[in-house]
Image 1 (tube, rainbow, N blue to C red):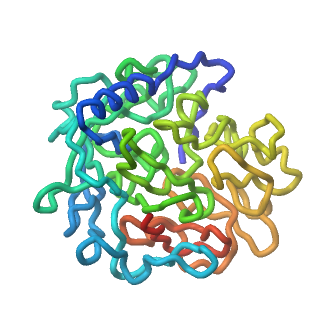
Image 2: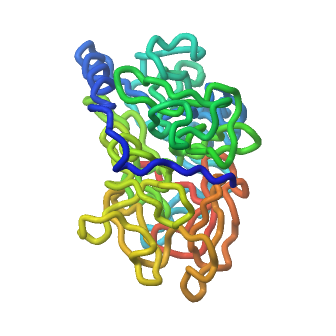
Amino acid sequence: MSEITNAKAANKLPAPGPWAFVLGLLALAVGCGDPSAPVAPPFTGTGGSGSSSGSGGIPGTGGVSGTGSTSGTGGTPGTGGMVGTGGTGGTVGPCVADTPPDSFLCDTDDNCAFSGWVCIDSGCKGDGGAPIKQCVPSWAPSCSSDNEDGDCPNASDYDCVQVGTGGERCVRVTSGCSPSTETYDCAPGFSCEGGTCVDRRVPCGSYQDCPKSHICLTVSAGLGPIAQYCARVSRTCVVAENDCTWLGNSFGSFCDDVDGDGTDECTGERDATGEACVNAKCGGAVCETGAHGSDASCASYGLCRFDNECGVGFECVGLWQDGRRECVPTGGTCDEVTDCDPQQVCAAPRNGGSPRCQTGKIP
């Protein structure tokens, strides 16, 4: 992974209310009888295997099982609240809307009227099972210029773009994605695989349905949820209040260098101390995040760089594509996200255990 050194949050002035404009638009849509809301995007604006429709209309080559009312053979939760281990039938997608979205609709990025917005599959389907695409705001990390202080990975693939009336973000302007810059190129719930943002949104009803180091995002428009899916907490950030929240869902209350690799990521508050949870303050343990997004504690599961940072019976493994590694028990049935079918993730189950392909749970 090429090292990306982000400026500290203390050196940045957060943009005023970066999501206020979005929420205002959604409130206006609701007032007009429109219950839809944006779902987080892959930012390249291109499709590939993560953006194409499965047999049931949910993005990803994994499709859905049967009519979409039940998950695949591995989609049910394990005992004790543990999420499933994957299976041959895939899972239902993240859409939980009573009626399909019908605002901000698009076919390509060119249909999006606002600066920094992109056109993606919403996760919901329309008549005939066709995926519904929407214009949504980019959710890349904040920036102040194309490459000032290393905010953007490079000036060739990224522009520092004003997103609607919110703040500026490092939006990829060339096609494809790169694993090391997955946070910039792909939305929460997507991973960069083979140059494409692949849909790995795992359905959930609460954080208890999600694996370790994930939270359950709920996207709504005031009349009920549109989509619910698990998203990994450790995303590259510059300004916590801009980059670690999305439509009211918190990935963490702080932005700091958790594992000491020179790149900041979203993290939680360490045990109500008022400080960011980072490994350097965990006394030999690692920072475990994801129970509620804004909470964290020093424990056994979390970001690491080397095996000797993990406890007995644990190893430091790169489960995702961005170069970040985390402490998990040895003996897993998967080593990285690409070992699992689309719309599944390789992660330690919520109640603990070695990594396995997780399918989440239908709300």
